[in-house]
Image 1 (cartoon, rainbow, N blue to C red):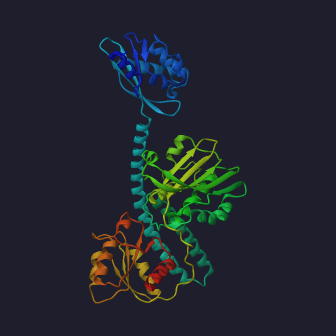
Image 2 (cartoon, rainbow, N blue to C red):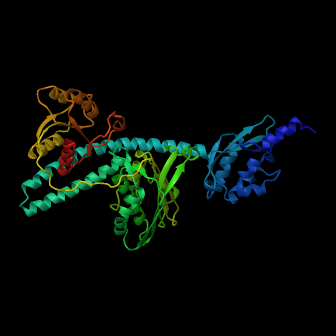
Length: 504
C-alpha cells in the first residue's frame, strides 16, 4: 500500500536534523520527533504527552541537562516561560559542553512549535574567528613594540661591547659591563618572544631531523626539569625530516618543558613523543590557519595540575600567566604558538584540572633529506676586515654604533638614512663591496627594493639585511638565499656574517 502524504510528512518530521516538539495552546506536550528526544539527554525518558512546558523545564534542570540554570532555577524557568509566550531564540550550553539553540514559533490555533538546534560548530567557528582577530591585533601591536625595542637594544649592545674593549684591564668596570650585557640579553630574549608570537621573527627554515634535535636537547631537559621529574622520550624511528628553524624549534620545545615542570611542583612525569601524521581536510576545515598535508607531531605530555577550559582558551595569549608575579612573563606558550603558525604548522592544547596537560606541536614534513649537521659559529675574536660597506639604517644610534664597529675592525664604511641617499651614493664614484641595510626604512623604499636597485648599479655588490622584526615581505622578496641578521646583534655575530658573505 502506498504511503499517504500525511504519512510521508510524519516521516520527514521524524528525520529532521532539528529537534521539534509541538505544545498545545495550554502549553501541554502533544508530540515530538527523534532528534528532540536525543537532544534532551538524560531527561528524555520523562517526555510524555500532556507534560506541561514548565514541568519539562524543571525536569531538565533536575537531570542537570542545562548547567547554566543550576543555582538559579526559578529565575531561569521564569525567563524561559517568558520566551515561550513571546518567542525569541536563545543559546544554551549543555552538560556535554555542546551549544544548542532553542526557538519557538506560534501557530494560528495558539499552539507552539519548539525547535532545538545543535549550533556547537557555528559557535566554535565564531569564537575561533574572534580569537584569531584579537590575536592578530595584539600581534601587530607587540611586533611594532618589539621592533622599536630591538633598535634600542642593538645600540646598547654595540656601545657596551665597544666600552668593553676600552676597560679590559679594569676588573670592576668589566663586571659592570658584563651586568649590562646580561640585562640586554634578557631584553632581547623578551622581544624575540614577542616577535615569535606576532609571527614577525626572522626564521631560517631548513630540512632537519626532528628526532635528532630532540635527542640533542635531552641533557638540557634533564638539567632544567630537576630530579623530581621523570623524563621519557618516545621517538618513532620512521619520523620524516621537517622544514623548521632548528634554533627556534629548540626554544619552543624548551618552553614547553619549562611549562610542564612548573605544572608539577612536587614532581611527576614528562613525556616527549614524535610521530608522522596526516592532517586531512575533515580536520583542518575546523581549525585555524591549518593546511591539510603531512606533518611531524611532537607531543609533550605531563601529569601536572592541568588547566580548566577557561584557562586553555587564554593560554596562548601574550602576558597571560597563572604563575605568581615575577615567576613568568606569560610569553612561553605565546612564543610556541607563534613559531608553529609562522612555520606553517599547528598547535593544540588538551588539559584537565589535576589530570595533566598535552601540547601537540605540528610542523610540516619535508620531502628532502635532513642536513647532516648543524654548524654553529664559534665565538673566536673576529679577524681584521677590509672592504667598503654601505650602511643603510634610519635609527641614528644603531647607525652610529654599526659604523664605529666596522671602522674599528678595519672596514671603510659609509652611511645612508634611506633608499634615496643609498642609491645616490651607489651611483657616485665610490665602489662598495657590501650593502648592509635595514629591512624597514622610511622614504618609500624598503631594504629589498634598495638591494634590487643597488645590484643594477653595482652588479658585484653583496647584500646583508638586518631587522628588528622580519616583515611578511621577506618570503616574497623575489630573492633566494637571503642573508639576514636579527637585531640586536653582537659585534662578533655581525663581523662573522660580513666575513662569510665577502668570502663567498
